[in-house]
Amino acid sequence: MEFSIDVRITIEPPAKFEEVYQLYRELEWDSLGLTVVELQKMCQQSWYVLYAYQGSELVGMGRIISDGVITGLICGVGVLPSSQGVGIGRMLMNGLIEQCDRHRIIPQLMCHENLESYYETSGFKKFTIGMTKARKEG
Image 1: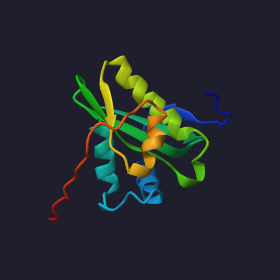
Image 2: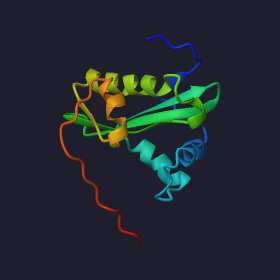
Image 3: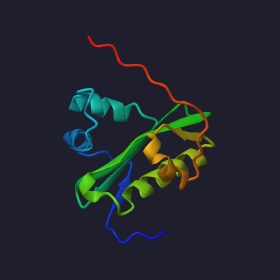
Image 4: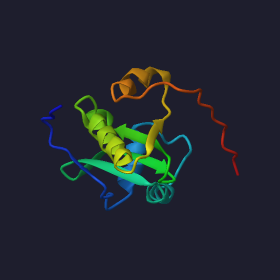
């Protein structure tokens, strides 16, 4: 698939993690009230992270949490609403899947039901029921 947009996908994090904070806010992913420092730690402790830039602006990112041996959980794949629909999310997903393939890691992910068909186009299949437990406050 060819993309006519000028996007750079890289492992290079933004110079200021406030950009990641802003991305999370614009995607309305800030329900946990994470700080810039916590988001930076989240990225640094991930097994692999990709960032998408248009020019110098961070427009998307995605990451993998993994033990580096068996399974890689793809998470936090998101693109600014103003940059969605042009293939940036697909570019991020392809890069994350390629990283798993290079290391013979099984890529897995959890998503909302309305996104199932999107991830199926990347070869994912529904295989289990996902569950979550609310985080304790305090």
